[in-house]
Length: 514
Image 1 (cartoon, rainbow, N blue to C red):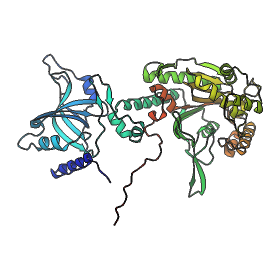
Image 2: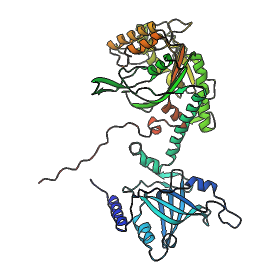
Image 3: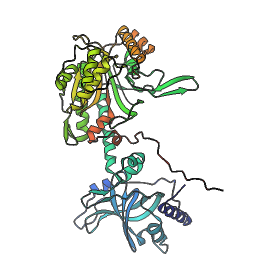
Image 4: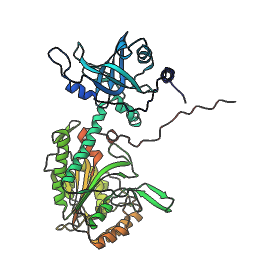
């Protein structure tokens, strides 16, 4: 293993600490009593300038800066909440004759990035900065790699930072350490999921878990990841959706169920697609897609306002408002509005000709539904910025959706489009087992034509429907894309702790000739 000069120095410092009889990786519990943000926000002084609270504190974190001034030093300690200044005096942390803890350890053997614990009392410096006067210092973990140096001016502006996206995504642990604002993004993600879970719980839905490894991939049109189970000697697939299992639970007697879960699709990657992504899906008996549109508006408005305090979020130069009601537009009307052409009566051949006239690539595997989807995706979707429900899809596009009650050839489905991307997909669920079998068989035909995203026939799901499923509405909402909107990000990699990436290239030193 090749080590840089700085890494060699840190290992020498590690050895030096051990030679002093100090364990650089102690296992004992460290009694943290306060955090940096709490101290900075709540510190009070009396008229004499003395501390009214936080007389004794114990906190822990990384050593992020250090200014050594002879017998005393100032340093920056960063914990999970914030960074706070600490004041370390030789005589305070090393009373008596032995000054090695300060002279040798703190001044020479500690490095930026090391974890330390400090006990002491809070005071304000002459410049008014809340600080901790350290009376006891403990090494908690030695850092063997140097952190990137991130410089900020007096106004907090970063001008020398750990900004390379590939490095940040591969080494998210470093990104979170030196670019602390990234932590707040992921805290917002967590609060968003909590708010959505609260809304669904209050609505009376039951949170459930369904299989990730499935014998038949279903519930969406996508290419799956495939594996093999040795004991059962059978192929299994990482789920592309959890829809069919959740609907089985509605058959089983639950009136409403939901699941936050990972989905996996063996497809392309770009700014809004990752092979592994998070969705929430929920299904409610005795409801339809009109009810689901109303509920989706209420859910998103509640969740966004709970996390941000407002219903508006800024994405680049655009301000997107999640205050309901959202615009509602049928798919055919949307295509007509943005292309000037009514395609509602076109057959497959006419659709293919029209798509080609729009310079959309067409091949023989595309059926009527796929062609309409391509036209909408290329010419309409990217122009829908404010939350918009696109409703009433052609039956060919929606093999799991109930036929429209009043519009022949269409189904009761909507997609929610925000900032030019699909955020949610919902139906009045198809519960006629005979119709469902015919739809599956149509998908098998498309698969034989070369459509590798066509659905497969799931006999067990059909059997469940034959036992009877009540009228039901269901929806899937993309959590990652919602977090992107909430935090103003344009890349899905920014809102995933560990996005999928190509294998890291490693430089392997050649063996010396003998």
